[in-house]
Image (cartoon, rainbow, N blue to C red; front, side, top):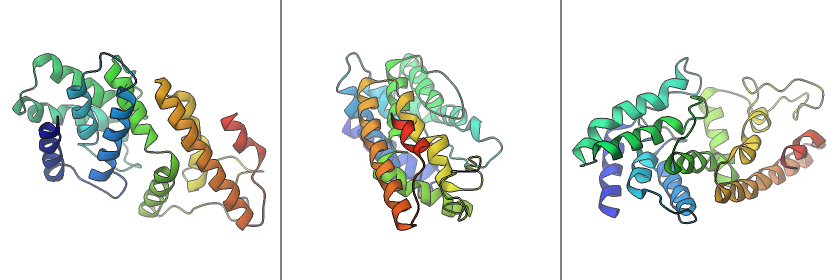
Amino acid sequence: MQELRAKLRAIIKREMEQDPAHDIAHLDRVWANAHRIAQSETGVNLKVLLAGAYFHDLVNLPKDAPNRAQASTLSAEKAAPFLQDLGFSVEDLAAAQHVIAAHSYSAGIEPESFEAEILRDADRLDALGAVGIARTFIVAGAMGRPLLDPNDPFAADRPLDDQLWSIDHWHLKLLQLPRDMVTEKGRKIAAKRARLMLAYLKQLAKEMDTDLPDHWAELLS
């Protein structure tokens, strides 16, 4: 597995269009999350899971790209010749392609294998917790999107809009992720990381001399 991982990382460094939020460090963390979840399951094909972890962002489109929802399918297609060269069987190749295609939130492809469920959870875990906080602001900075609405920072009296305000994305998507986790281990890790994010928001509100509306904490109840 270590030899295969090294080969996958070498391909990624050469072939993947990386940005600070979707780089080799992100892929390493996703694999660590996936491996951690896999240890609590049985019958997991680690070779397929490893390939999915490192190739799931092989085609990395900007968050605001009109064809963003197609990125995971394009990644699965691009991965095929590399996996063939690495000696993947026809069955493992197809399984890895499904894992890659089904990981995406925006693609809406339902996972049909243990490996696909695990990778989807593992990738979403990297959007939560301390790393998730950092990645939110990296993406927002790259897109020129402000942190929050200075007049109503936590949407107490306005509609949430994550196309305008970065923090709104936490309410509309990120803090919703724990309930969408498929694996039991993924749910436990996600809940812990989401609580950290909520604590951050409470501190942020305090430093802005305001209160965090109840509808934020209700997301985790």
